Length: 336
Image (tube, rainbow, N blue to C red; front, side, top):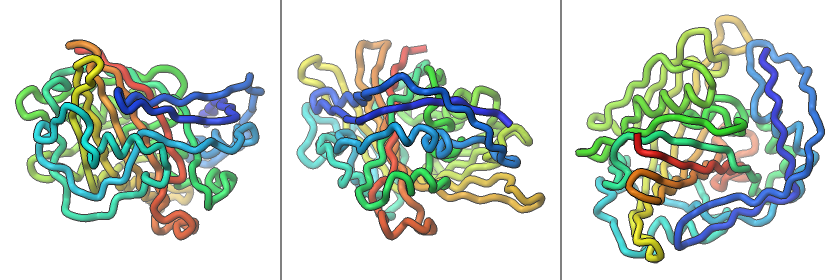
């Protein structure tokens, strides 16, 4: 049993948002954490983020109102990001929605026409070495007490691999992985990139194979894990239900900024506590990513991940569409 020691104490979490640069950051007021020892044994299940947050919950005061940086997007993504290029953010575009600083606009997307594949703008194309660092979390629901949220272990992010691309929410230190976007098509190499991300977050070669064909179906992706190495997942199926993006120019630097969103439904298959009985967990979340060009070879960015309750969750009707947890990561990238 691997014991994960992780401490996060905060009296307030405030997310500041600059519309000019779409730069997100969390201001955390911290105190020196007391050492927490974990002694609970869970058969065949790794210690999860729910337990980590539960151990530090006593030090978390009521969070301040969020959140700039995310929004509700019900329309499917157009085929090319280049087709929505603007000099400044449009009034009804993704960037403007991100600037509202209100968790109420983080509603889960309503399923509609399947979105097209995300086509990335020219300044993001090529191979990149990416560094990601956890930057905080909040529980924005005013209907469900935080103690109840923390006790709901199926919320995405509370267990390893419950959010595939960020397989260990709260991982300490910087996580390094690769991002490759085809120079011609503008499509991301999700097969290689997702494997790189998962392996980096878990700290070992966990992924055996990623199956994804953006030409046949850009909205479904399968991840097969190396046998007997990852307790929380043997296989993951990802379904993208909605996308939106916007590309515009930062007037202060004349550098491009790209924002995009993806709403994901994840089905995780793994071994359960009963021998021979498969475990299946369904999670719903959305990623909201911002990339800003620093120069031709360097990028800065951030990603917010909003976790929603699944309709099968007993708490679903208390918060059927708004997020119950939001995680922030700061990104930087150097051209490889």
